[in-house]
Image 1 (cartoon, one colour):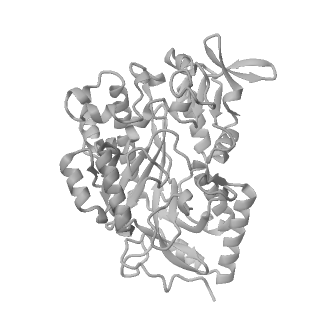
Image 2 (cartoon, helix red, strand yellow; image 1 turned 120 degrees about the horizontal axis):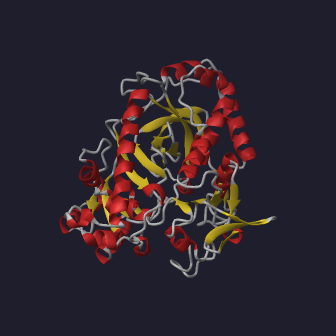
Image 3 (tube, one colour; image 1 turned 30 degrees about the horizontal axis):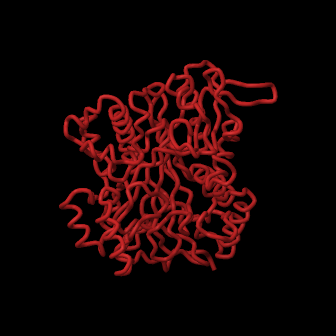
Length: 476
């Protein structure tokens, strides 16, 4: 018996592979045809060999909230998510527009603050963001680029239109899963990949290194990846990217500020470091400027950065632009700096710091998704329709105690893509995190990390909350 999508149900959701009438959508036809030529046993065998390969690669992440073994393998579903070329071209244009505007916003916020003076964003919204860093005022990063690496989370709602769910402008993770998923898929379905026109993503490490070198003024800059250490949840990714780029992976013990420069300890003595791709949060970067208790930062590095003697990617201070309250203003930010309407819409957002919005949220909390302004990873969040009365009351209390810290959005039925559940395909909700590099120009990597809510009915795709991932094909 062959593997088949015959009994697959869209169940009233927007499905990316099938229309409500069961017609195969553009781009999925050749994949479906080839996969349905395989026996069910062969399909399952390939799935199992992909899981074994994953174990062998050691692609893990850490879960801090559990007491048992904290290292986990990120589950991968072997039915790819396919995006056709015309849909992607619009996403790409929208992301270039968004990153360009957010970079201008950061330059402005840490210098003249024209956007505040012109009344587009209230001053208190900026200053009350815990990611607004006063020490960054007046700083001009190399080449005036603040956000070198972005992971922007996109979703598709009931109509299939892409929308921006949130921006990740500090240390976005997950790109190693995107790259390994593609390698895994090439091994699992070589005949399908060979006959499908998929845009390449394997040059990401090369493009990343190219961008990091670009932000230095030195002809042959020394680039390093700075990790908090082996206990960080994304340590696999830090070591993977350093290895793929052919640069050193360092932690705080390897770097020192010496004679006005950041230097790396080597067997031959100190060596000047020109560019640091940091995977450490801003406030842990330098105990002399930010958090004095930081054991993973480099004392004095911020002064070296201010003098333009080392480039940091991403620039410290970028987190203010991915605060979830600032997110609500991004369409206005795009209009203000670029004079354009946003190509990719935001999800409708209620700002609890504003009285009318807060009143609406408190009265309709059971219908809404409530999020903390500065949390990530699916934490600090209430999904109204799936919550208890007790949880709703608790969140109402939180909102009244600290309205600035909360936003709310309508509950959106994320689009679904077929996933292999036991031995047959079932729809599961997905989002998409494309990666964008900003060097001599803004480059959007064609694809990204598709995260899947593997629990039936769940809308939470985060790996720390039981999610998995898929290979994402962008077709020409």
